[in-house]
Every structure is written in C-alpha cells, then in structure tokens.
Length: 226
Image 1 (cartoon, rainbow, N blue to C red):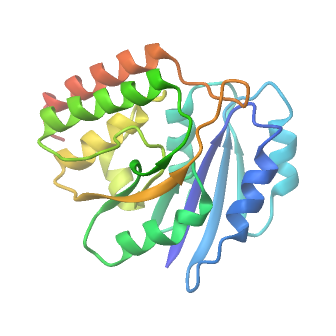
Image 2 (spheres, rainbow, N blue to C red; image 1 turned 90 degrees about the horizontal axis):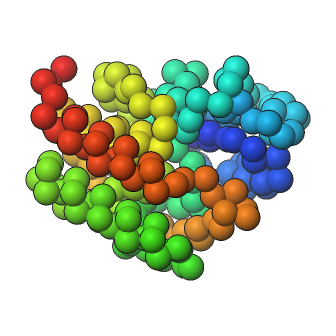
C-alpha cells in the first residue's frame, strides 16, 4: 500500500521544515509513504526550504505563480503515485486513524472532523462559517457530514482523477466532496486533533472564499452528471 501526502505551501518558509519533520516521524507499518510538496508561487523562501527537504520520500514541485490552494492540491494529486491521497493540514499523528478507516473498504473517502475531535481556539467567524457551509452541503446533497471544510481529507487517487477537479481556490474542499457524493462515493469521518492557526501564523482564508464555496456547492449540485 502506498500513501501520497500532498502538502500545498504558500509562504510557509517558517513552518515547512517542522511540518515535514512531524510527517516523517509518524510510523505507518506496512505503508510506503510519499510526500508531495507543491509551492504555490511563494514570495518568501519556501521554495528553498522545500528543495532542502527533498529526498527519496519527498517530491518537490513549484508552480510558476500563485494560483491558489486548489490548484496546488490538484497539481499534487497529478504528481502523486500512491493508491491513496492525503491532504495534510492537521496533526500528522492522526494519519494511521484515517488510513485504517479507508483501507478496510468501508468508505471511499475519510475526513478528519474537527467537530468530532478537538478544535481549540478557532476564530468564531470561521468556526460558524464552516458549520454553515456544512449545513448547506448536507441539505443540498442529503448527507450527514459534520465538517465539510476540513482540509484533512483522504481518498483514492483514482477517484480524485475521475472527478476531474477544476477549482483553484479554497473551494476545492467543497468541489471534491460534491463530486465524490455525486459519483456515489461513501464519505466517512473520524475525529482529529486540530489547532487552528492565527493570521500571524499564516492563516490565509478570507470571508470571500465562503461566498465562492456556496456558489460551488450550488453549481455542482445542479450541474449535469459527468
């Protein structure tokens, strides 16, 4: 079994090395691990740090300009060679839990839920914005997901490629979930530990991304199947 861990990075010079060290420290017995970092046109030293971390287990990719998180994730999926894809944006210690839930065949995708787990000190506007988007999704798509906007998602690479993803921004989270559900894929959740970042630490999502997310959910719900 091979797991590709996709890490989009934009101006993460200060934090990237620490994140990669934590990912590499997680033991995954019987699993071949591949780390794919995609530098989304950073203006700081992210690319230099990324190149210094490269090795047999790590693929470093640079986009020619800042295109958005969704574009970086999509490129990471294309560059990956693992059977399973994990989007890394939380505590790497939860990797085995997500992989176990997906590998046993009971689900086609596994999301790390901050609602079921611990979510300390989040900005209230982002917390409730995420909850609202989740409600909108559940109503539109007839689901019972608790944390649609979690960026900690694991799924089969074949399903992601089959979905023919298009979104460049943070609405990637809504797009991939909507497309998986419309293709009758089973999505389950497991609780995760999560410490949200502050804007000073590099948090980048804005309220306008919420508007794009709602539009994405509506557009894909009523689009012809493909």
